[in-house]
Length: 285
Image (cartoon, rainbow, N blue to C red; front, side, top):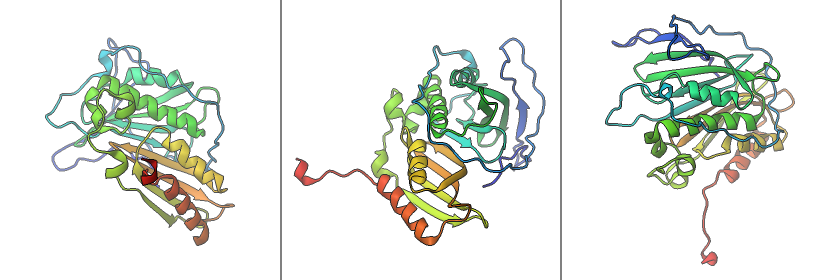
């Protein structure tokens, strides 16, 4: 999996600049300096643990001006939330994009702190695709990156909740808009979005599992549980929410080795069965 990069070079007529944002900055005092996200050497991958009590997702209490920024356009941009477990050995990286409409997301950072997390670094990068807010977050109790799928899913839902609250126009662009938002998507998520599952060799010690499917609450936790239930180890991964679509990339292994073809088939069949489209039998009428 590609490491999260960095300072982005000038494109065709558009320059991407990055400015640091202090997590404790206020509206009255803010410093802006150029920063570079340096690639970090990967540490030994940590196994995701699937055990924790239910995590309550906090919502923002009141709309604050700090969450609003950018200009509205005739076409609503596609919301994107990336949770990256592979590019930084010490922190979980969360990237949030909604065209150029997002501000510094101070309220979102406060909501993450309510989950028992620390925002140890924040940056804002602007390019032709929009404004990219990146947070490096760790567990306050350990100072380490998040290794609990349920807490990762709580982070994702917290970000989506706040985005819908402060930018209601994103509700119809997100699958969770039907659950959390004022306006559900026009598309039928379970019907109009196909599921794709691919497994590739990724070196002598692991395989790369790629899943694309319709998004829904709890999906990240469910995927990790299915993988773990057949004794496959999830070493690291990235989970992207892109509008109605969820894209997951997991580095997986079995006893320290890549998956054999037979085990690849078992994993693929298990995921396809779980992610199958719902059907209604005639006998139920």
